[in-house]
Picture 1 (cartoon, rainbow, N blue to C red):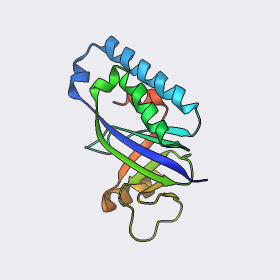
Picture 2 (picture 1 turned 90 degrees about the vertical axis):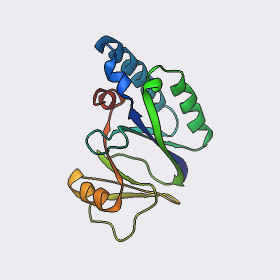
Picture 3 (picture 1 turned 120 degrees about the vertical axis):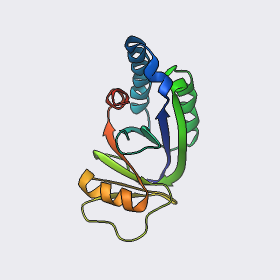
Picture 4 (picture 1 turned 30 degrees about the horizontal axis):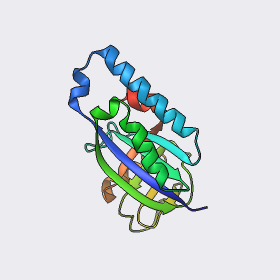
Length: 163
């Protein structure tokens, strides 16, 4: 069944690191609880850490929903958290496609991918973009060569702890 996809990319602002550790923990816990609640709703929400794999972003949220208004609803709730004041949005890619994430590593190609795919990768093909799941050993060279973003799937709290 085709559904709407939103890939949201965020970068952690340096001001966050200047906060006291206890305050950082409180902000991360609040945001992780929000993401956890959204993961239990209709559609899906997958959280990926891009730390160590990307210079432009630290966090990737892949949301799938039957209605695109769900993207607005999630963003409204995110704006009510204090951590979002320390997360700079650096990209938003919208599309429609089939499938749901399930693997550990994801490579996102916002403008598609040319050529054939290496074996052993699961492909999510949207109308414009391409997302691939598989091992980091297979995805990293492809992401480097084709200009994709590579992320490791994490629980919301794990991803925030890596920031």
